[in-house]
Image 1: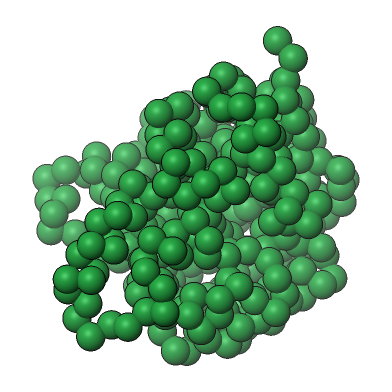
Image 2: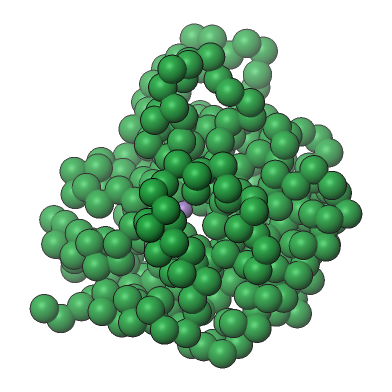
Length: 320
Ligand code: MN
């Protein structure tokens, strides 16, 4: 079967020494599966390119797998290791510049330091934006101290991929259900909640050109747009927004299909937000590139919509 051109950008690697940060969730995976994931996360020149070719994926934007420096407790170490990791992946990108781009690892412990590192790699290394693995040691990015970061992101005109990780501290609701706390459910709830904090916290009113990307078909948010408008109007709790909640979801917040290869969910997301807000991605190596490619090529869309989702929207967003 002939493949349609695709761009994907929830595609992970692991920088040297960053395996330690991932131990909490890798320890839940069987040893042989973890070893295979580790091999794929560390590869830049062989299997990754073969799988891209087989799936018709022309270009990917690489990002550090979760949680990276978001769980680093030492500020100086977070700043240093983010910088090292960005330089590390930039060297790998330089070996295959037509196939790879980079998302910055950012030390969000320090809003100004994160802004400075983002600016450095966008201007000096041609990075396409940042991918941040959720909160940093329990700190969310809707507070006023992050204005300096969002202002710089908006100036640089690059998007911010908000990737899931564990909630801060064990949640009572998951007591006795470790299977729910991670990627199966808890990560999506955590990332969606963080995105809503940015929206209700006024980040998109203060910085209207900021784009936040959510994976996993928008972590459920597209399917709740109507209810956000209905219930926020009824219970605003003193919060004033310039637009209805639904108007931020699909504009400031856009989504990828990573890890949700369901035609019905894709139709729902496009129906809610329009085809320009939905973009293909895989979530390599945790999901299969060929399964994702088959899904997006066979889902019931017209050719123009499929072209937007597979590559057109990404080309526009990343100025490729
Ligand atoms: Mn991922």
